[in-house]
Each structure stands twice: as structure tokens, then as C-alpha cells.
Length: 81
Image (cartoon, one colour):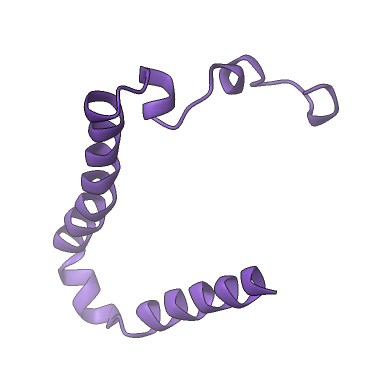
């Protein structure tokens, strides 16, 4: 039941954040918004990857949250994975 409530809360929060955007201002400031959005995603992602690899001594693939098998399965139907 908790996962249903948390999923609903995430959807509502995302909707409210999008509802507060002013389309006129966003059209003029789309470059700045894109830079902040990309930095807000890639900064923590790359930071956690570096910590996992260099501090926690994870191998490269797991530190990037990848599995080697995921690349082997590309293009195969779901029934044969």
C-alpha cells in the first residue's frame, strides 16, 4: 500500500511543478531551464557514480548502474530473456 501512496505523491508533485510553469516565460528562458534541468540530473548521477567507483570500489559497470547482461539482451523478445 505504501508504494501506491508514494507513487501517487510523486505524480501529484510532478504535476504541480509543471502547473507552475508560465509558458510565456519558459519560451524565453528555455535554454536556462534546460541547463539547470540537465545539471540537476547529471550532477548527482555522476557524483554518485564517482563515489561508487572510487570510494566504495565498485566495478565500472555496477557503478554506472549497468549490467553487462542488459547489453546482451538488446533486440531479443521479452519471452526469451
